[in-house]
Image 1 (cartoon, rainbow, N blue to C red):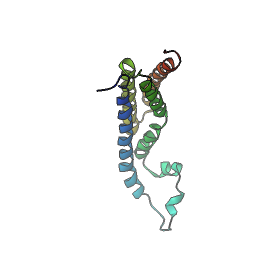
Image 2: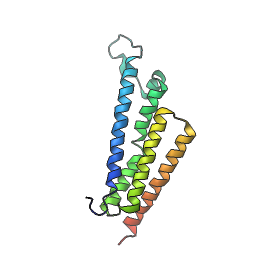
Image 3: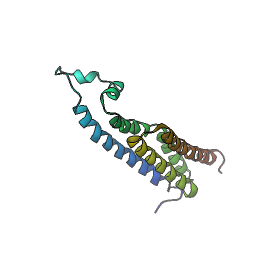
Image 4: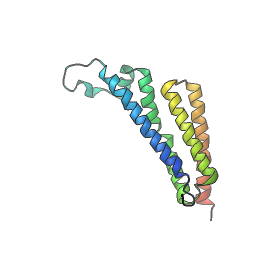
Length: 149
């Protein structure tokens, strides 16, 4: 049973777990793809590769997964901070918990879409919707911090 205001921690853990799923998917596709890149027999030849070089060397679909994994370390970090703030201030139940789950659902759909289809406009719409949810959570956290007594 959750303490008052702690329901939003469910979406926090779910999104962290989803990030680990994307990490596994990234390496399950990236390691075999890297193994197929023609390599020089020279010791350390692969140590000069940069992320941009790998984008040119690896299949696009492999890179889409890696790009999404990186994206899960961008805007979601704001979600983690805001959600923890709401939980600490006992504002993480009810509508805020629902918004937390909506954010996680949108980010998972965004991940799946980016990793498989990767059409820019639908992906942008998913990102924009998740950003609107994050803005609402941020507004609620601001209300909890500055206006709640």
